[in-house]
Amino acid sequence: SYVLTQPPSVSVAPGQAASITCGGNNIRSKSVHWYQQRPGQAPVLVVYDDTDRPSGIPERFSGSNSGNTATLTISRVEAGDEADYYCQVWHSTTDHYVFGTGTRVTVL
Amino acid sequence: EVQLVESGGGLVQPGGSLRLSCAASGFTFDNYAMHWVRQAPGKGLEWVSGISWNSGSIAYADSVRGRFTISRDNAKNSLYLQMNSLRPEDTAFYYCAKHIHRLGQYYFDSWGQGALVTVSS
Image 1 (cartoon, each protein chain N blue to C red):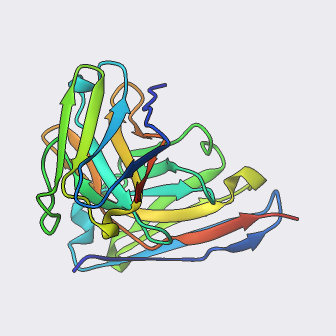
Image 2: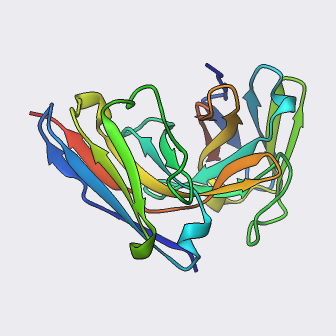
């Protein structure tokens, strides 16, 4: 099965940038999508197809995908960005959807 | 505005059954595949099952295949998950999610608030 590995936690000061990595074998060959989940709430799509943002998502959220690592970057972090973030891909071999292990972003 | 509202969660004994429902509104339901994703308390997201717009294509995670059955009723704008032979490890919030398939991209652009299923004696 295909595995996506994320760091368990990232801490960042307000106004600084946070980078969340998502590691997977040759992940650059897949489209990577990112979800934000605030405490007690449902996930929300923040980046799709590696780099695109749904309407209503601030430009501060951006994504990239290269080699074996995809990255979600949150610029000028705000207190409201404190949440768990998950990457996700579709694994064509099994027709299954795979989520990363999740990263908790803490705003100091 | 897209709305997905799950119902049917609750406490069930190991080996028991439960049926979840998801009522959809705000979009043309029969144009989209729909999926179930679950999250055990304090844990990460796990894809459970998905169904195409016309029920012609269905997929399950290995952990639930043979025990869970996904279905939909387009006339009622509703998605279902029949869960049989439940195990304690099935305890989780179950989210209904609207699926997007475009140019090789497969992801979920809207989610319900979730229904809690607790399997315990």
